[in-house]
Image (cartoon, rainbow, N blue to C red):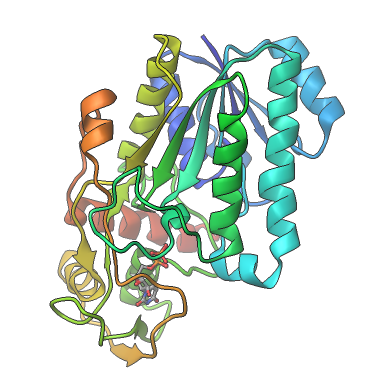
Length: 324
Ligand code: UDP
């Protein structure tokens, strides 16, 4: 089976390519390498191209003749989306339309889309089920919701995977996230443990949770990649269009993550309580029953210690080899 992976050289994409490659799929990665890296593509062929370039897209589709598309090429920094909404609507919505048009032209009818828990905004109830209200609170979340909605109007069988908090890296340290300015909690924690940052700031300790800090559902990137393989197999077996949460169904508070990092990396580091960060839901936990039941999703790394250890080992390499 031939799979076209848009954004396959990025953090999550590279793990999806690895998972597909290990299963013997024929892969073509299409990535503009704006945040991805050629070395991260462990299987298949990489074509450097942009989704705003219909001509190249069509040339690639006409040569490769994909059976299915996995689309995770997007801009993903929430505060940036607030500052530059048009950049986000263009990159995430218009470019997705280009890709969908190309699919239509070449009769590709299976499409896996990387969506986000950001489509829920601040949920009233946790764990969040897929059919709960969709109320994004930033342009990033809206871009994901818009693409979900557009897909619903097309004669393309699709699966939208709504990611919760993705973290961790390859145990063998081949691939992982590479960012210069980290915003995510686990990356910041391990960097602080490695002495790269002086202090870990905790955004808010007056939330209505047991220890007052926010709770998130952290999923290891390899389990998330596996969810994509399952989604693809589901579509190839004739499954109907659907949407699934990708999380474990339970969460950890910021303080629990901080303390686990200190334990796993065997080092103490300073923390400071700061103001709440704007737009942060107090709790965001996936209801993962649907993906477990319908896609037979069985996480292998539902283990905060493993997530933090692989993230920490990877970060060491990122700094040693100056990968960013
Ligand atoms: N967070 C924090 N300090 C940091 C980074 C994040 O306290 O340096 C908190 C953030 O406010 C949120 C949680 O950690 O409650 C997870 O944030 P992250 O940016 O990793 O993911 P998000 O849930 O925003 O997608």
